[in-house]
Amino acid sequence: MALSSSDQDMSARLSTSRLSTLDHLQIASLWFALFSQWMSVVPVLIPAQIAELLGRNAAVKEGVAGSVIAAGAFIAMVVSPLAGALSDRCSAKHGRRRPFLVAGVFGTAVALAGLASFDRGGSIWLYTLAFLHLQFWWNWAAGPYAGLVPDVVPKQETNRASAWLNVMTVLGTITGNAVLVALYSPGRLSPTVATFIAIMLLCLWLTIRGSREPAPARSRQRFELLAFIRSFYLDPRIHQNFYWVLVTRLFGNMGIWSIFTFMLYYLQDAIGVRHPTHLLNGLLGVGIVLAIPASLLGARLADRHGAVPVVRLASWIMAGTAIGYVLLALHPNLLLVIPVALVFCAAYGTYQSVDWALVLQVLPNNASAGKDMGIWHVSMVLPQIFGPAATGWMLSWVKAFAGPGPAYVLAFAVAAVWFVLAAWLVSRVKLPSGQDESTGPIGRT
Image 1 (cartoon, rainbow, N blue to C red):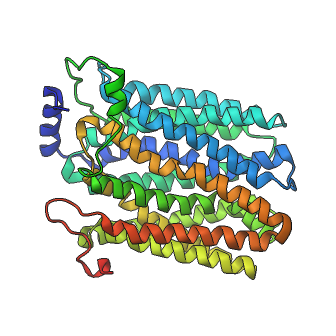
Image 2 (image 1 turned 30 degrees about the horizontal axis):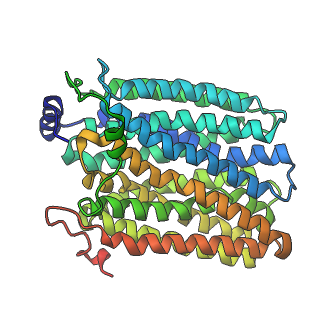
């Protein structure tokens, strides 16, 4: 598709302009709000609420929790690229992404209030619908937001933007879990929801204030449904790097969500922790604090050796921690669980520090950035379909005849395999302009 005059003007401005640190912070603010929910509501709040609805000792709680989260991820997989593609074509006066961000945030506020209505019980089917509603609005904002970043960030500042986005990921995760620790208790979700809504509205205002979107094109091609559908297909022969980034990110997230989703039950059933919610919140909080210096280290390594070797190294470390969880399921030891969890969080932070920068370097076309970044976003949410569902039912079935120890040995061994695949295949990414990122000392295989 040819670039419109507005898109060409935007590219010219982005090649010469520079953003201040305050600009980067404001642009990344909405990512802070989204991650404050994604990394607390999904791995902690949803399993905890489902356990309350079904009973804490219900035999199928893992399978049900995994299936609910997987169903929500399916909604995310569809909505994020769709909303991103629609925002590419939007010609709203104040920017093509803004209407989607505003609608997504206000829809999320309503959906969070719906979750709070299950404080004192209810139908698991209605609860699932409430979570699907929340996932819809999260991703109605997230897809266009991912397209906003290449719209307003100059190409020479993508590494810097990626670093700030990861800082917001870390701080958002800390904040979300701090909110749960301070305000959440079974049957008392309203204060938590009110706080999440307030954070989201503030961050929306900051992002809109700091994102100087280019003026929309005066004319757009007439909308044709078949052409719109065909635009989601990207020829893998032309865009090999983009596909390898998608595949390796998908495998890495398969490992991540196979672990995160069931850490609450792992601590309770395999390690024997009596109050796993508070321990998990604490581990996530401290671990994410460690992810900040790990992210800075990852950015330095990426500047020196390239993003690909950093992703590979972080994936190998996460594979090693998954094996650590396997060994601890065989010989439970709470004191050893803590350092393994912290190393995992640090490696995850290092991975995240270069995640955006890597995909922005292989993006097929800035004119369709919303659609393409929405497709990239699928590589994060698709594992939330298969990872939690497959792992959850596997845990439930194996526990039924072998007990929790062997069940978690098998589940986390599978997670380690996903990380190994991510580490192995990311070497296939070859960046343009002769920037082969596998030549430095850290990148040798």
